[in-house]
Image 1 (spheres, rainbow, N blue to C red):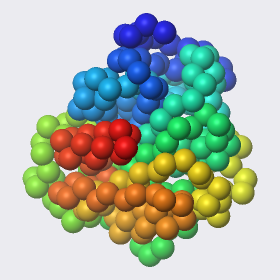
Image 2 (cartoon, helix red, strand yellow):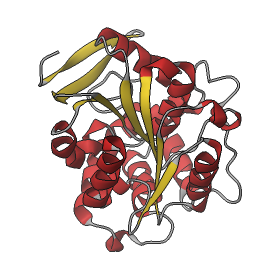
Image 3 (cartoon, helix red, strand yellow):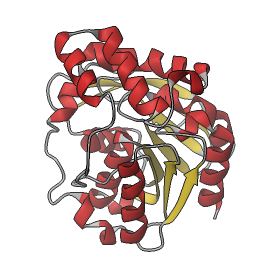
Length: 271
């Protein structure tokens, strides 16, 4: 592989966009389910100084093809790494990407050198209490086809979080997230992920003790309490797992606090 490359790969009947940069051990970045691989812009230059890094757009996001019907995210990741001849890598995922990389690690343990899980829940984790504010309103807006309102409410839910008003959040972070978010909203990717293809069975939440690679769990201090509870469940369930809580950040701590986030991840990976 060259040090810098990007392109498209046909996987499971859809074109996936990917980028590779840097040199050294392989590090794979899996994005959250409301943005795309652009969420890692503030990590790219730091991480590629130490690793050969792959980031990609899942189907229905960014430059990749729309998700026509249900998809199996972990199989897309497997096929991508197989195509790029990656035998094993450090794997990092945020939110839906975090859920995906946990499932991937359980299905392909020999391909995972370490696991970094950000703002995620393991598959099968049951959320308790009321849904996040604006969630039901967002689903109704999506069902009506109101793209602008759906997108704004997704940013309210995930970027602002339940403890802040929009004006309390860095406007540049909101704008970056909104620009990425409009694509999955237009593609109705949310619906495709509501019924995933071939979900991991049994799900990850009851199998965390089967993960035997170094694991870092990261959460934003201002994220939904259930995401923070899930972080505790993973830290306790995965032997030797470390947990870092990033202050002054909600669901995308890497975008809000890139300095703290990058230092935590590189510290862990170098260790």
